[in-house]
Image (cartoon, rainbow, N blue to C red; front, side, top):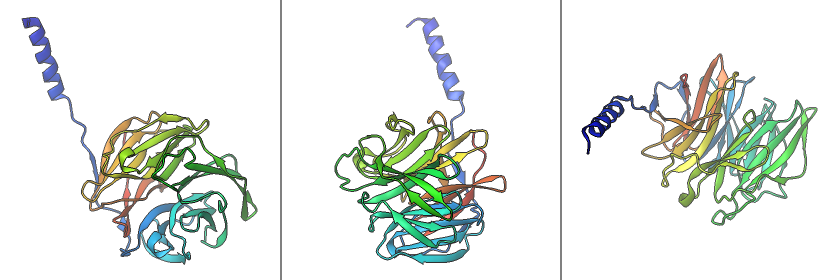
Length: 315
């Protein structure tokens, strides 16, 4: 090897060794932790801005719990017979939509958690995740993951409905299949309307990943965002969406020993960093909320409680 080439390689090695390494983010000092509910199966989290509450599905008890969004104080519980409530989303700060796996439907409540009705009863077989995006002030698109026969690859895992506000009630149109991605065991799903992106978690162990789909065409934008170990479930998905359209995705990698939250750029979907929450493990559902000029993250801890953290500015 020539001396000139040797010097060049040595210089590159020095530059690489001096480059700053990206360190993971650790969030400490939680804003609150709710009182643990044992053998409950806390799963997904919704947020109502005007009432300043979070709403949590409690699968094993067939309940939905409501807590203060700033202090974690328990407010009420709603019993749902034989429902196995799982995914949750809130529309227009007016409606709360909950997927009920065992009832094979989506249950709809008003913001005070009064039951209004259901839809999807004729199409859903094992519903899990739910999300939506807005068409206009009265019209929305609701998307639900259906994890029936999850050992088999299917191209009809995501169903959608037009959801229309009618006075204090609602109506829905017929169901449609969204796109045709090949998926097995699907749960969490989340929309970014501005960048026309839909993320969906694939939980079948041999295929663990977060997939990105085009919200307009249903085509696969990115088969796998990356960074997930095959042994840990991809779980909750949440979005930090700033007014200037910057922001990032938070995607949960559920683990008892290495519970991680991967961050991806909102526009490019490129990996940014990995975050840990102090004394929080085995996280299922997560949610983000913007209040008082700050972003907050709510995360389920060990199926038993919700822990809330203020999110730092992340570039």
